[in-house]
Image (cartoon, rainbow, N blue to C red; front, side, top):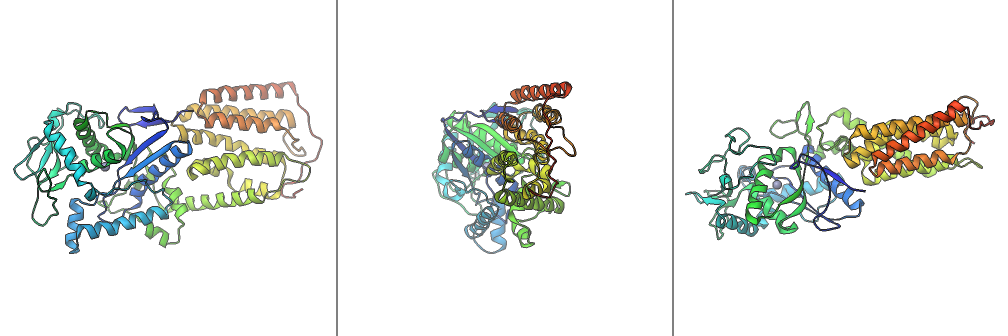
Length: 499
Ligand SMILES: [Zn+2]
């Protein structure tokens, strides 16, 4: 079973083949700690968390690095306004970030390097670029990357380097440079600004060089996955590729994964827009962090996600239902002398647990169709028919589940799911005669089909799922037509009456 990711650079889904077998190296662009992070930032970090958890669940060793940018114009400005140091200000917000990550249950990265603790690595990289003719100095002691020296510039963002114009998306810098497209690797010293004495002169690093230097320090010149918000594709990641590959002459990153924005009130959540919410504000209102976590993960990471009070409420009740379901499963006892409910319950529990074990969101598709029905069914120990009817819609949840896991076409997987589901229904009709007065006899066939289909889909073989679904459908239809199967004469156990 392979894993595929949509790679921004390739513009297509590509199979994951780690550079070092069994070991996936991941770098995520972390926050600039000039203030408390908002939940839009945490959507990115939750995606990173999901990615790392899933890779580990699949048996890979994962080394995950997330940087902390602790020197930047906004930090300098903030520290000046509060009459404190950038060290004090950034450390305060870094601690808040870690505490919010813990609240949301985000896995801690293996390394969370601070930019200010990696200046020598940045200097070394800039020196290489100077030596290679890819960078130049200006009179104020700044050093710029020469985009004209790197013909492949802009491939990630699908830019035409020749046609690039100065626009709002191009960083406005106060520094003189040869070409408006060039970007600062090193910013010359200015009065009242922090500055480091280095072999390339005094000054402070530009933002882009930080990520190249820190990722390469912990993961090597070439590593597997680089993540970040879609707003980082240009210029940040575009610049990272240019400066890294120009310095090392090696491919920098094998797979670029970008997550979409969190929106609130129809706009991207951003401090500059003013439509932000913070983790602490939400939990202070008595909302559980698990509900917030689910709300922030309730859409595929490449789709814009709308956040609202309603989505938070919906996530809260979904978490409650899930808890109720697990509680019901834990206390469920099959009626004496009959075990099919138990068998199906186990199959269902496995599917849910599998999804939930990876991430709650994978169980979300199942949640929405299950609702309280299954919980009641399990609590009351009602007939196999009722339980089976509840499990059927769950199969409809497979397409979403499988698509979320594999980034295969939802349509493709959905057709397999629908075919298979309708096949089950026909089976029930033919063999047991659904309807009042009929009880479902023990029939392991259903359980086996369900388990087999689940395995096939979960192992990302929609083609096989399609074949299997077609087989089930045809067999079921044949049974209906031939009037085959046996009918149970046992009266149905009244729903809710128990055994
Ligand atoms: Zn970065």
